[in-house]
Length: 272
Image: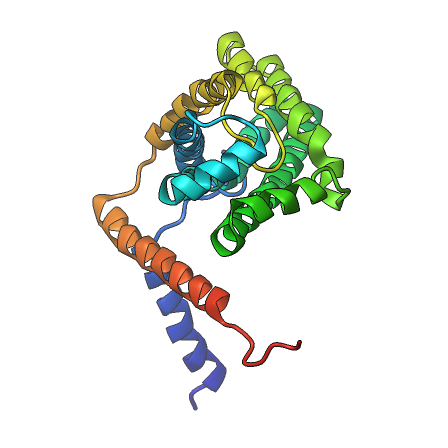
């Protein structure tokens, strides 16, 4: 008599094995979560996107009234600049996770605190990016004058994320010291990573020469390390890459479409 449990388990196991063979995922032992491929790609793209965004808005004055006025005159340019900067900042979390894991293998304390502080700082920058977006929408709907007044009235108001401002600055210094002490990065590249602490923080902050120095240091520290990670053996087969690429692009496309559909959903009635 056929055992129903065995007959049902076999196809599931076979399907899982086939899926793992078609879309292989490398084990995490060497780099920890989120793995070498995600972390290495983020190390390359994150700093470069932030630097590109900073360069696009570099010709406008640094402080928020000038940033809002620049958005009124050049909405596409400024939206692109801030979007690229925010996307690059978001991509830094897997990059930092992998770097902190490598540091932690040799010194758990430096890896832990460097990674934790930088991660909290990245959360704060994401909050700032959301406020930037809202301020730009105020320019679109109400004009630059009322938008500037609204931002000025709330500038400096307390929020839970303001407690993380110190983490934005100190995190990169701790991470850079940890990378240097554990020899994950050499002295020059560790110092370049520490320059990221000089990147201005807060709402509607434009680009200064110091911003470009800080982001150039971030690129010098992380991009070569990311390329080295991606170049390490073992490498995936061409067939696996050709399967993963369209799946990744389709997933990103669906996320964009579904996310935008959710944003466009409005209540049918508005209370007076």
